[in-house]
Length: 323
Image (cartoon, rainbow, N blue to C red; front, side):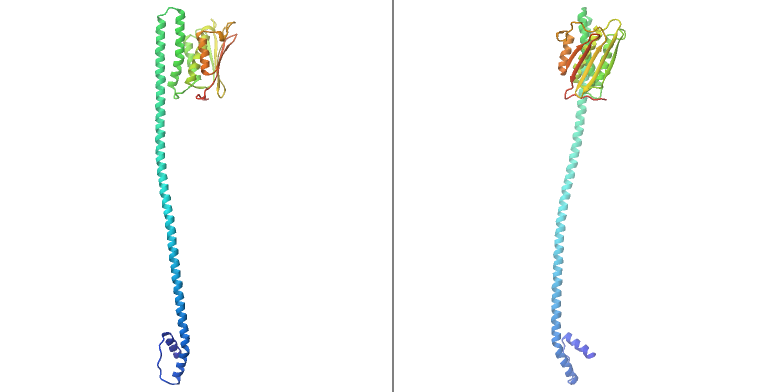
């Protein structure tokens, strides 16, 4: 056992033992001589295995380093992309915030302009109404110096026409909407004024109003108001005797872009030879001209009473609203 261990030691270390010459020594030398090729082959195998292992380790280390470097490059590229996208997103967010601020400023500016416009329109309506009141006062003063009945009556009719326009501006000035006028409110105010002017209560004349809620722009409200004033004034002046009577004012929406307005009384009616086309009085001429201005038609008919009908289309800039 000891000899075997020594042999193995010497084979591994390459040392050459020196034993005394003898049979045992010769036997050991013989064993050593036989073990030399085995040792040489073992050393070669070990060297080859070590070299192979070293190559494998180096290769593994190279591939690990290369993969790590490649991964780092990929990560860096992705990080650069993410950073760029973050910067672009941040720029977009800042741009959005800037646009929102500009939008708010534009909305506020628009609101201020609308408010200023409405205030200016209110002021215009107020001043027009005041100027019309001045005109009415001048007409009233002028009538005080007249003694001719026809002249006084003409001035009185002119006052009513001016008042019909003045009521429109007063209504627009007092309402929140300075561009549209609710005709039902306007007609009621006009009827009230004419009733006071012609003493309807004393003369036993009553009014009945059947009005749908129609909103009109001032460009059509003024001529329509003047037509109403003429029709109602003529009925108050000529239709009734001492027994009085009734005047019916109807405002009807026929379809989306048309309005029918009717003033009817149960008075004495029209003369038998009445012809609207041949009538040349100032009031009739005004109603015909104002109907054309509205882009509509005017009809006057009736035997037991008079019916004045105005039919016109609502223009594109006008609107109707049922409130």
